[in-house]
Length: 182
Image (cartoon, rainbow, N blue to C red; front, side, top):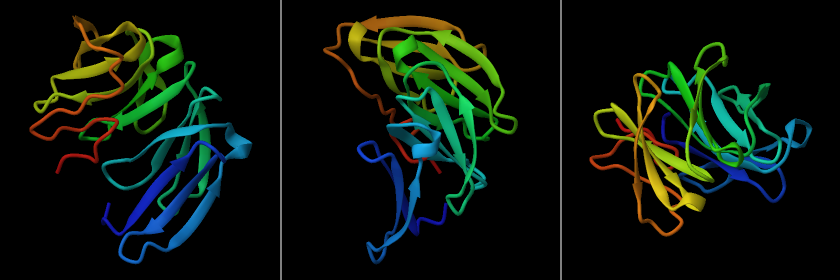
């Protein structure tokens, strides 16, 4: 949150590494083997109180405290990939790519609140700048799906893309590929 460190998921060795941005020195390595394999997405809660790491091959998200200590593992649908929070931190959104779902979790209890059917292999997503919708890149169905962010219902599909992997909205908006908008 203070822009002094960068956290990187390392799918090849099931770790998260934390570096000091100013010096590029490694500060910490978090071994996630006990919690699954293939960490993919990582996001810091808007209030800075915890991180979420998606574990693609283990159908889980791991919750880390601000010092990168593991707090708990939370089950997800198959193939969790991209992850993001809404601006308030009330919701955690996870792209469960292998189950063709976008999942919504409570940001405090981690309880699953909604599952939204989406296209095949939806890896990353972004809110629209006004946060009224989510844009979801669905690689294997060659589309971007639009989801209403208040009702968690699909709005429409925009076809014609060649295996879209991610989507970023501008003006800057929160999403699984971007740092949170300020």
